[in-house]
Image 1: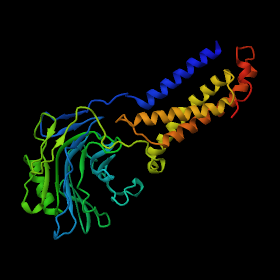
Image 2: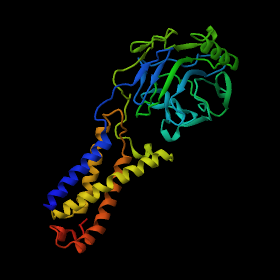
Image 3: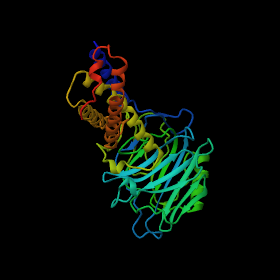
Image 4: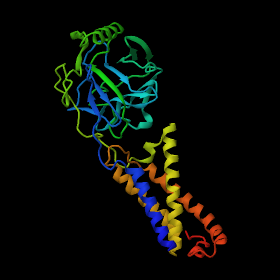
Length: 379
């Protein structure tokens, strides 16, 4: 009777762990919708938009400013305490080529070269309080041989002489509202997007802000090298057309998906000193402590030899299975760090049981099967 109860408890623990690790068990609907009262798209919890092909926005050869490019984004975040990738441009060999992220009230620019695309080597530039006020923000990121300048609503907000984007940083597949490789959804309204092969000047950035926000589109000149212009003026359907003539349109898939989703990312690439990384590691450790505790008790009651070792191996296998399945779920990240943290949590649960088992045997000697709990499980 006691072993049957323990069996049921273990089944319940596994069901809870699988639910926490794999829910939802399918690809949710893509939560992108058209704004009803103006041009633009609204992005919710699970949402993404992607280009139909790779954009070619490399700077022109022989340009007077050298390797250069500009991105303009008109947007309004849903909340200032959120985080997520607003825009990403990537190539298959470099998922971290270029991205714009909301980091609470700050704007974060991230870029990595094709020669060294490791996340740990990604260069970052922060623009403090870019989203501090709950209103639409017109961002202009202009990069050239003298570094990068960031304008908010036509006004210079940050210059970074040492933060230079590669000549082909803006050439690649475009993702809006999320990141390639693993989910990093952003919530808010996207009102306009443009890319240029030249570094825009302060006067041009201000003119684009004034003409685009006051009218239906920016006032452009041929010398600015506009290669993609998305006005989001369709207001229906699943395609956003490019008005610059590149032929690369944006597509709104029916189901949420992550392009180039990573399968079992190595732990040394996942490692980060960020608070979110350590919070996730702690949750994975704590989440598997009940697994180690209950399964060690159950296997000990069944008088299995080396119950402690068998429990740890079982915990590792369950964690591995979850990580493999997560590679096919766009709302989850598949990595090897969780396998180590889950195994550590299982070990802590086993140790906790080896300490509590003898105590229960001494306090309740008449209960069925309790006598077998008194001996420590073998490793």
